[in-house]
Length: 145
Image 1 (cartoon, rainbow, N blue to C red):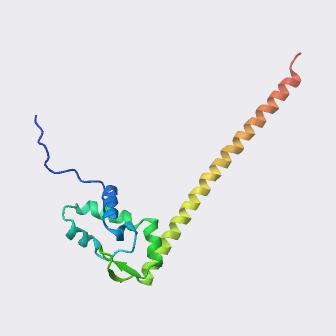
Image 2 (image 1 turned 120 degrees about the vertical axis):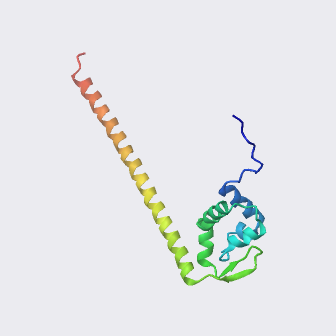
Image 3 (image 1 turned 45 degrees about the vertical axis):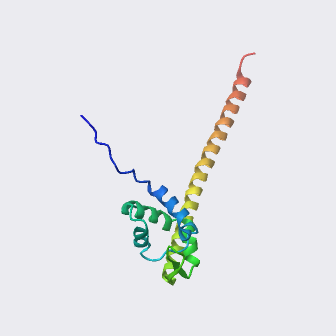
């Protein structure tokens, strides 16, 4: 059985692709609000990019906290060359704010649950230590000397 060597270079992961794009394009590096259809602009300038990888990379980018924070206060969207590409609507800013609020609320609830578990484990450990001390005291009190 023989294997055929692939002549195509392996595609970078979406995360690696995003890092490359952030280094290459200032608008991505600064997490500025992107123009609607920025994926088409990227595919025109970089046709070798895999569409699925690009969509995954842009999805990670546009769902990042940094991007959403910028989007919630922005008034302008930008093309790859940093030129204006339309306005950010009030609705889009509100959606970004809501997404951030929901994420931070969920994170706070998760942290609260983790802390409650730690506190519960600590109380159980202290109770066990106290129990052992009482048993030791009882054993000493009633032991034959």
